[in-house]
Image 1 (spheres, protein in one colour):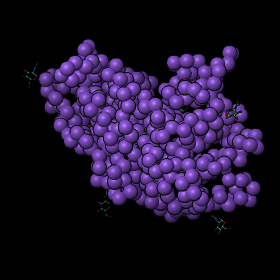
Image 2 (image 1 turned 180 degrees about the vertical axis):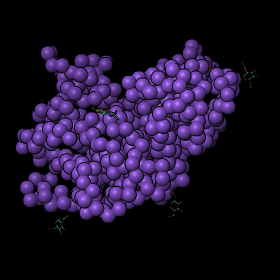
Image 3 (image 1 turned 180 degrees about the horizontal axis):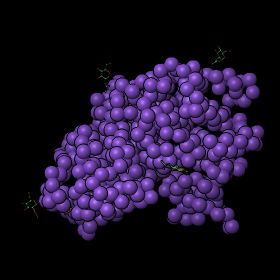
Image 4 (image 1 turned 120 degrees about the vertical axis):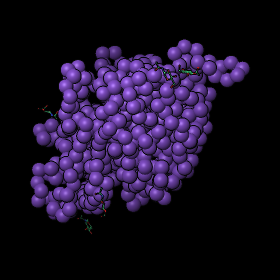
Length: 477
Ligand SMILES: *[C@@H]1O[C@H](CO)[C@@H](O)[C@H](O)[C@H]1NC(C)=O
Ligand SMILES: *[C@@H]1O[C@H](CO)[C@@H](O)[C@H](O)[C@H]1NC(C)=O
Ligand SMILES: *[C@@H]1O[C@H](CO)[C@@H](O)[C@H](O)[C@H]1NC(C)=O
Ligand SMILES: *[C@@H]1O[C@H](CO)[C@@H](O)[C@H](O)[C@H]1NC(C)=O
Ligand SMILES: *[C@@H]1O[C@H](CO)[C@@H](O)[C@H](O)[C@H]1NC(C)=O
Ligand SMILES: *[C@@H]1O[C@H](CO)[C@@H](O)[C@H](O)[C@H]1NC(C)=O
């Protein structure tokens, strides 16, 4: 609570220029406040919606840095929360608009206006119909940085690497079904602004707060080519500590205005996000006339994902490690629940995407990381075709170099460790009982994605046995 209050104070102390621009941030504050109250006060819940309190307890840990945003196991409950939250949210937006009018906060500059009455006009002025907005929707340890790089390497595409990282750190909702959905709504609306090249929307979430629209603290700036090339790369300033600096060269602090201009100049836009899971929340973006949304959902064998997370996020997976090391019979039930919740939220999004409602038709593609690892160029071509952006030689070259492929007359072959081999390494080291837990918790998701269950330890470690069912080469519509 204190952290949130401090954050709000920081916002109120902004210089007047920024405050106007932060009309949107202002609206986020409202959302935060309301959801905090929702957690504290059931009375408010009933005022907003008599049925919100039926939202079940979530499967998410309070302090998770990788919030799953799971709604519940129960499908009806998740529908309930979305249906009930959306009107509540719309009402808030309307109240906020009125409040901003009273406080005489002028609309943001053209093109930075959150979805509003005159949005269509902006669409026609600034955005051609051919501009694509790609969301690479994944979870941690699914190879999303690698796949994101396909888009990052495209010279005419503005790519951002995990911009929601800042939002997650600032708007830390406490556990609760309503709060999980609440943060998903905030994420979604930030995504929309980013797709519109309103990069200012991130500023209130960056800590320390940017001054004069300049910051040294944009998360993983170096992972976005567009933020490290001219003219966004301003001359290097000595003695200015840049936390996430460009790898290829030294640049001055990031000028958000220059970055936003670069975003508009490029023909297309792509974002990678491991913090946004709920495909159904994207309907307003898919229907926004200013956007032409394409969602690529990247999945990976949950056994491999868990094995990788236990190593990468050791602190968060202490109890798993203990369970593996000490040979106890039982793993804490909440850990299993959490795992199941993760798998189920991914599966539900995929099921929606594979049987898309009208608003999602032609906008969704499911990609398995294993297929990308086995046939990176082919999958890259499929993804770019789906997105409707021509694949460039630079992207192909990057893939060749980074998957250790070389070309001869007959096509591509691997030289050293090939990426397909790398993607299966987990099988050799995984204790069978760990695989069993995942298979029990994630069975439905594994069946949907074509990950075969291993019946015994020998099968798990025997690399001649494929755990991957063939699927259509192209899962999209
Ligand atoms: C969350 O963080 C607080 C304080 O940092 C800690 O006391 C608590 O145990 C944590 N809860 C979980 C579920 O990790
Ligand atoms: C959802 O609701 C329907 C009808 O109200 C009911 O038949 C079904 O069992 C419910 N599903 C779950 C998972 O509770
Ligand atoms: C906002 O103001 C309009 C016009 O004054 C009014 O009709 C509407 O009810 C107000 N909305 C809210 C949520 O107060
Ligand atoms: C950032 O770039 C804009 C656009 O070129 C410029 O007007 C502004 O002065 C720059 N900001 C700083 C702090 O240099
Ligand atoms: C990569 O390694 C796998 C497993 O060893 C092998 O089956 C496959 O043929 C190799 N791929 C290429 C392109 O050589
Ligand atoms: C691995 O699986 C293959 C194919 O099923 C089988 O022929 C082979 O004997 C197995 N290897 C081991 C070590 O079990």
